[in-house]
Length: 114
Image (cartoon, rainbow, N blue to C red):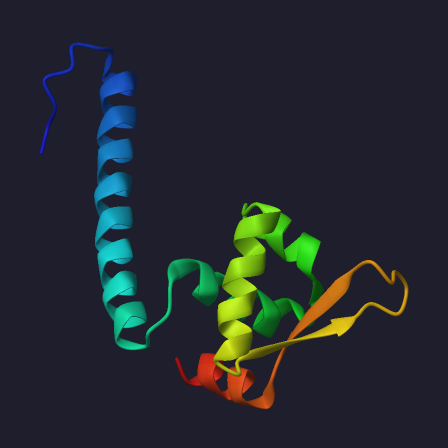
């Protein structure tokens, strides 16, 4: 669908591409949220499970950075995943102040089947 923007041909093409990208993103997000809702997961929880599946066990602080989440938020999300039996925390052998988050067997099976 063309826009009523009176820019150059290149600017119009750029704007139209952006609009199409945003529509595709919105469509994908709607589908993802529907599937996540059926699985009783939030987008943040899904992000953590996916990161752990593909990157392996991670420091909690690093997970927050990768997912652009604050320390408090990432703690709450991990708390809920831990209560569900999908992740576990263990002390970092290299830094006693840090925690390593890893998928449980149940968590790995769950996210692989998702």
